[in-house]
Amino acid sequence: MTETLDPPAVDLAELRASIRTEYAAVAAEPDRGFHFHTGYRLAAILGYPQKWIETLPPGAVASMAGTGNPFALGEIQPGERVVDCGSGAGADALIAARLVGPSGRVIGIDMTPEMLAKARASAAEAGLTNVEFREGILEALPVETGWADVVISNGVLNLVPDKAAALAEMYRVLRPGGRLQAADIVLERPVSASSKQDVSLWTGCIAGGILAAELRDLIAAGGFTIVEVVPGCEVFAGAPQASNAAAYGTRGAGIRAWR
Image 1 (cartoon, rainbow, N blue to C red):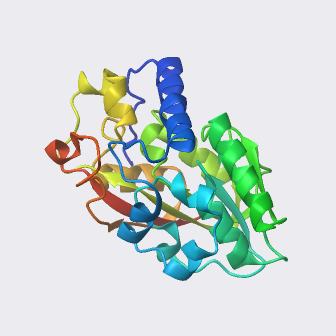
Image 2: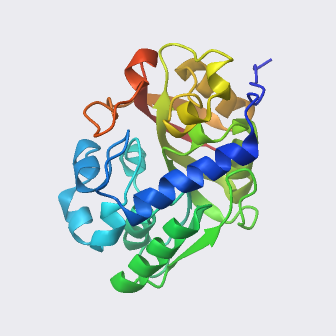
Image 3: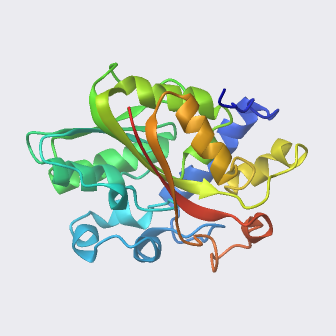
């Protein structure tokens, strides 16, 4: 039997409020400096093609945050329907909208109003009518069952205490044969139970991370098949604010799986 993980004992309301505050700041003051990289520097670190970044409105790129490149895990095809879980300022959703073309559709989901406003403004500026942004959380995606060909996410699953619930929702919105392409983090050393109650370590993209083997098992337990956790780069080194990520061996990782 595949082992599942119990959600850690953290105050969920406090955690969500802290995450909203953190990412509202990324939306409003992207150059302020955070414990993670943002913007054009982040896009370069994560290997996004320059031609993709150049086509995006500057606001979408400036407030970009993430831990990897979900598009490096598989090609997005014209006509496909994509859900971006934790879409932030909209960079990944807008890239996906260009890749799927006018016959495809993209829905971005985020819980931070300031990020949603910025993403919607960028979509309008880019003239993209095949993408929309909805307010919601990963544990209850406001998307029709079986709607998506692809679910993407970038650095958001680690911020969710109940990862099993979030993965169940990703599974639900995918059609049979659909695929998950997510970038996130994995740890080399587990976080202690007491540290998992520290909200600052959650917003620092540490406390919500788990070991690669645990993540693989959790995804498989959610019904996904052909689950791969692909090693990524060291995404926090050199960020403007100090981070405890190195103490836990925190690294980026790619997640690829099929429904």
